[in-house]
Image (tube, rainbow, N blue to C red):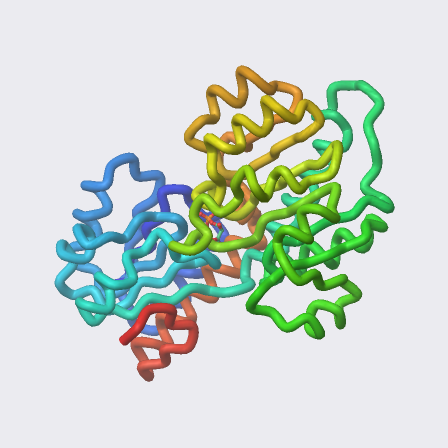
Length: 307
Ligand code: 3PG
């Protein structure tokens, strides 16, 4: 089989070498396309591929249509909103992710952004500490759990809301479960987003929810830009001079937010939550192993689309 590693944002070199070794040791051909700038390059590279490993790279109907041999797409990472799952199902293509593999890296960045906010973007003025502050984790999945673990080390009081995670599972980690997003936002100085981008969550972080935040609140987004109602956020930042927003995913209104709220708004220059050597190795190698196992035995563990 021919396996393509297509990453617009490249993995660290040791991860690429190991992915290649796993693929070629199993007898597969291996091709890398990284730092590409044009969708046409991805389409060209996908033409001969039986399997594609990606990060946030967009695999839509057009890419799949250009890849008649394609049997599997593995998203080396957690969120798979960049793959058209329905199109994949229609074409008999299996889509997988590698859950949990880059969670610690994203969680470390979330806490780093909290410290950065608390210390006034390192501008030399007197800031605050995270100790004894309340943190609301919005969705208690793999990243949320890691955020809770690290935040407890900082001495934060940690709350979580997740309609899909039983309260007793959250409580077992020494985290206080709350019954609604509204309650989470009312309670917490810091809120850290860990919800996926789905039809239900798009634009769900809106004015009604933001209005619940207490004075001097900070919202941290290492999840997806699509979950934010950007117009509501911009207006809320204008109305609430005490509120800070830090994100790892550049919003559509980045220029306006930068210009209007330079001391309360920060976006990383490129999404970097999972951009560590460790996360690249964990997620990349997991993807390579899952792909080899799929071709060897039809193993579809971690499949995320319908058959
Ligand atoms: C994920 O969903 O795993 C993270 O958002 C990381 O995405 P990336 O691989 O594009 O950095």
